[in-house]
Image (cartoon, rainbow, N blue to C red):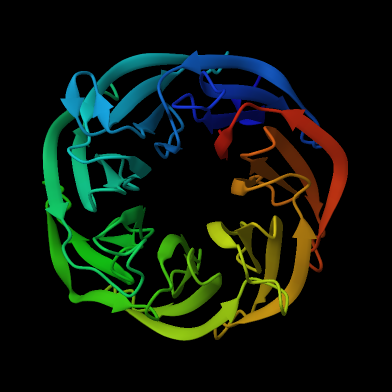
Length: 358
């Protein structure tokens, strides 16, 4: 069996989640159908990522207490290249509460995580055997923004590298900013970039970013006001400039919605975002030269609260994790229009919150 045809799904195991850890599924690249494969037990792996060689997996443990210490954790695993089984390597404290996102730099030297509740960023060196080594960076954000309930303090929600690994972008929902850091290639130390941040509209709540494969643009999904912001990116300085901000919803459908994931297709021609409440995937076409977006449409996710989704490496399928209905739905992507067609396959998955192809 090729691990290229495996899909891993992070789940909530507590306080009320039904997951047992990271569940794996076999994926048929011809039909898009999936079947259960296995599970690696761990606590609340709400988000995870791979190194560039797909040898190792790194997961946050989204918790307020981990291994007797205050705060969450970060766990490393080796991926068996024949079976896809995960072997635990070691864990480190995240030094903040409820870590919710994790990324490995393109060079495979460092792994960084965002602590949502406490609004901080932690980085660790990756050792030769894939295990987590010494701490290389820690940044505590400070401040607040317009929403007194959701933005009384900083809430780091995503850590994303540019393709060269020179810059780290941190979407902070509590500050209504994307913080921009320069990464020291030798030490992993973070320093504010020449443009240290890009502000969003007050109350927008920036959550996740997608970096365009061309390097000149980035796309930010805003959780609280259900919008997506297209940004021009300066590859030399790492700076971001807003191009446009569009609603993720049809007219009149805003109440009770919040956004979650944003992803580009592999060729960068189409952009997708998830709506929780409206329970849909919004689809945009990306204008190649300018990076601006044009709405294509919306597709129901076939379940409630689509927390995460993933596009297959060949760009032909999209899998949605519906958190509150405990299911994965698979869609075929029209290569000409970017539109989605439900293939009629619902796969049971307990409290799914992150889905990724190996």
